[in-house]
Image (cartoon, rainbow, N blue to C red; front, side):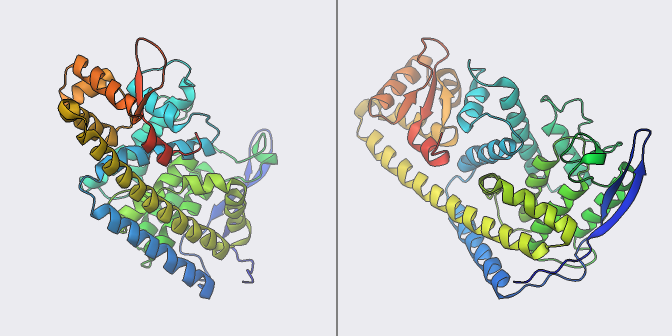
Length: 386
């Protein structure tokens, strides 16, 4: 498809004591002239919608969908944070949440943990009926920067100073977002677009356009990428495309990081919305299909392991309780399991030893105290390359 250059905003000159530079102020959404949905984009859009429908159908049939939310929200937070340069893995995060295990990159994993808190806060607020809005976005941002390296970067507040992307200063930056005094107007227009003003927009297209617009406005001093990626599942939830926020695109963006950033820039500079939508629809389709496949694999694993445990005689009851808990929290400790299952620490430890003997769980610290146990088979489905 031939992609023509279209205007997507205006440049304004900003002068400081040190230099003058041009900052970009995006036009409000939807794009003008309108996006051209050719046969390829229509096909990809349909495939993405179909994959989302299948995923939602699988999740709706689960007896306990929340079991998967714990792991998948954390998987997304890890991938989203890794795009920004953190080094912690899913296993690091799960271990950190149980106990401050030695050897974990604490600063990195704390940032990922705050990313989880932002997701969970927004999800809980929306569950309670709070609309997707600038207020909710700011609340999520405040959670995101609660304790990490960005905690002194005005958590929960739109920026009051200029930022930039790439380079050492605005004058040599790869891209300069709107001046601070334009941020509130830009974000207000984005909020209207999210609420179908001036026109109603199909959910997937809305999520795709809103993500780019948010990244272009870059309304915060820090954490814009992570909040912008969080916006995607929140929009799909607000639009009732998914009952649970189990579609997270950060893994796709991470796998295609160079192309991801290239396309964001092409939209800003050339108005290549169609190329971005092509990429975005492929990501939604692929990640929805992968998530559905992972859930099906996990269900098969859970059933197989439950049958194995049922053959264990007198210890089966306590082992089944532990197995049920580890489906929701695949890395945990004796103390946490004992509290959750109401089994004594002694019974919990003995049951874990039996599960380790049949190679269902694995003790991962190698120490006498503060031991952590992983549901190995499930973690290999969630994070196969760790």
